Length: 98
Image (tube, rainbow, N blue to C red; front, side, top):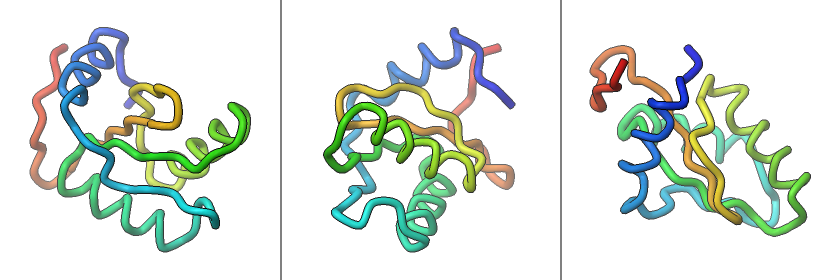
């Protein structure tokens, strides 16, 4: 389910005080990182990811490699930090405005 601009704005406000939960290292996106991010999304629904260095195109590729297998939505990117969201189907934690 794609997020509306109003929902993204709401989630950006909630994510403001969060610290990055997952940090990408030299190896970039690995199956272990994807699995750990999946667990974090199941538990928190809204997480920040600290991306490894590189240019803007490389960071966009890393975000795409993280979002696609997990069915996560990109809420925002600021520099090397991306905020991702995925609803927990079993026990939703964050109520989204319509």
